[in-house]
Length: 344
Ligand SMILES: NC(=O)C1=CN([C@@H]2O[C@H](COP(=O)(O)OP(=O)(O)OC[C@H]3O[C@@H](n4cnc5c(N)ncnc54)[C@H](O)[C@@H]3O)[C@@H](O)[C@H]2O)C=CC1
Ligand SMILES: O=C(CO)COP(=O)(O)O
Image (cartoon, rainbow, N blue to C red; front, side, top):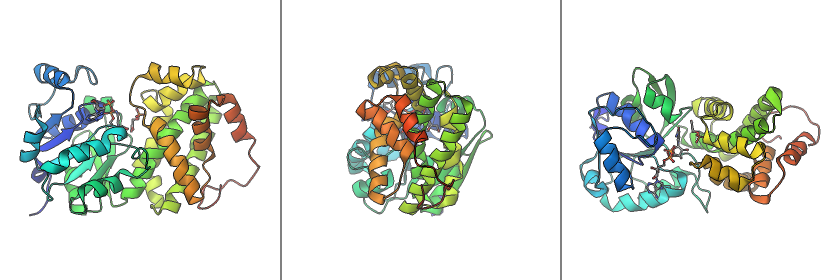
């Protein structure tokens, strides 16, 4: 059977946070039958009664084709596609939880950005390890704040899958008057960009919180991009992907706009709060905080220098003074500017 947007319906979106809800709304606005499930039953009942997710996306009324699903097991029996949108910390737990109810022809996508905690795996590898090799898998990524997508502001996304039919069908399910969805086969590249940019957004927030100005921010973004490129190329991703929506696009968005929770954390640290105080001030999902150490470890294993990521780790986990970290970056050995492979 040819895979189309309609053949992916009903889709069950797992994770009724900001992004899961926004993606469910986007597909439902295109007339697709979508079910939204979250682990908090009380919150789900409230969403069902109000026809909106007032905690994360207030005032956005759900389209009629978006239904709330209280019983995950039952919804999995009927669905034709599952989209996971929980934080990376919960990703493998969710896959273990749904696995017993899945047949192998059900395609799975996720919008989670980050790595699997403790082993630092990319989520695609974790998905294969848990679910086996038979499911079609896709990653949704790109510069996309949930609130703007839910409001219907213009946005472009990338759908990455080794299964081109699935990528096209999912892109078409998401594609609407204000949402443009592109496809790529570079699953690894899309995951590298979406993961590392969160760590760099913390760095950009710190830099701005310290009041270091626009020149410093531009330098940080550019050198941060060089770090992404180096890691991506050593891991085997396509360099072009880094210049696309899921790489440079998301790096620019997250490092420069205060809607980013990663940037918010950095801003709070840069303005003088301790890391613990900053975490509780932001009080939301901050993926870069979880990914930073794992990204650095991967870079070290691959022999890639990522000085900005390294300083972010020192600030987050070793109590380094952010001013001293910036100083350490500025004091690095003088060298030719080179964002290319193998150089630093
Ligand atoms: N918010 C945004 O604009 C965007 C978010 N993302 C990514 O999407 C992922 C989810 O982020 P958000 O929706 O923003 O987070 P959120 O904090 O708004 O919501 C997360 C949801 O996951 C649920 N959850 C947490 N642990 C769970 C578990 N063990 N089992 C089931 N549900 C669990 C929470 O109850 C909550 O409903 C993250 O990886 C984030 O980087 C990607 C693009 C845009
Ligand atoms: O990934 C995002 C936008 O593309 C959301 O960024 P934050 O998690 O930093 O809010």
